[in-house]
Length: 203
Image (cartoon, rainbow, N blue to C red; front, side):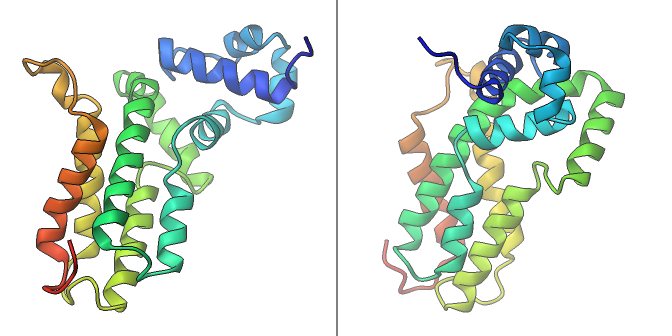
């Protein structure tokens, strides 16, 4: 059986280690070892662990950026309910998978600060999906499907914040798990629409 290319092996190993032991503890040395290559080889593909992390998010987790960019480019396509439900579904899955990876950063303040500085330098970070959803909602506002005067950034923060909460807030409930993603996404989208859509927007 032919071995996967080194870059793919590195991403696979990084994804697995970040999921199991967290981003803070997954060193490039351990990732390279798990990928069956040298640490020097890893740095040929990824100049830093932060860049490797960003590529894991882009290539191994559900994607929000292409979805949001596509919707913002074509406001008026589909119903708002359908679009926001799909955004919420993808976001919930993204946070469900990314939260265990990034959570370990919050235990080490200095490491978290360095990580955030690296994210800024690469134009990445957890604020980017909010900006993307804000851009989509503003496009729909310009098209007349979102009420004039609605704070679209606040609306984007509400939807994505709820999706992020789903990743960990339900673990302490009696059920011990989050609600099914499809049911959750529809409920969040429907509730948000009650506050931002124009009166004649179809449900």
